[in-house]
Image (tube, rainbow, N blue to C red; front, side, top):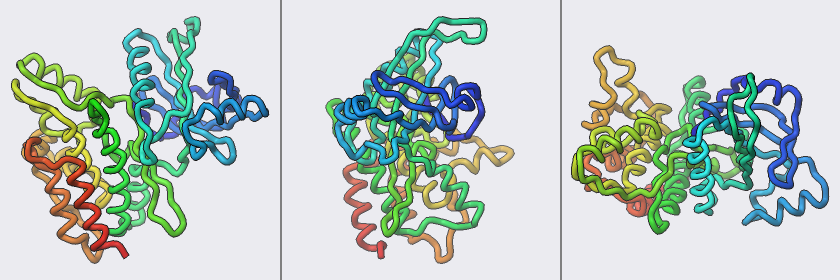
Length: 342
């Protein structure tokens, strides 16, 4: 269900025409396409205001802080061809409604409509999901910009961004039952610059989120988990137990902690700790991850403190049973913030 903000030009008729979209009783005009992935497309849309529609939309929101000052929002449109796709969208909507935290992207409204297939359109349903707009892009976009300039985040900003991700995940991990995001990575972290403050970080895309704890008691169950993970968890950020699952294992929310460690590395250096394996002639990504073999790339001058490197290594332990929980990580990141933030 993930989408990259790649600016591709599918659905150009909708975009170029400035078409209007109704999500329940609220009307939005498509402004531009922001990205696409699979059968899903992301648009910037602007609310067409009328007194009744505006008040109805506002009253349905849990918090007025999610209301846009200028009526601009992000809209995800999913073209649904199969019942399986429809169930996945419904599950994403259900799971998104479980969360309420400033560092998790809220689902503001949604609608699923039936459409009649034609020669040009093979889908039978369209889903519309409305979110707050964060148009500055993701951590992945930021990494590309910084790399082009040969710049890095400061140690203070690295820690503040990372702490916000931990806070959002703690909310997910604290539910009953705990939920894992399952696809924590820079491309799923929206970043907004703020004057005089650290950047705002918001974790998005809950299409892969599921109850975190799973008992594996057979080889078949292990293989099923690995197959699911290969479809839903991005390879360079996927925990070792999702690559090579034992036939008897207890999986829990610490799969996200591994991904957090990879993402902290990426906030610092702009890449995942294991992507080097994709560039080497005889490199093997799975082997590098399962054995936690990573390399520290060239960084800023002066270098990031050793304590930050040790912090990453603490999370990147291949044995999940000795990996820390997000509560432990938050305690430690607060100590590091107190030590290194100016």
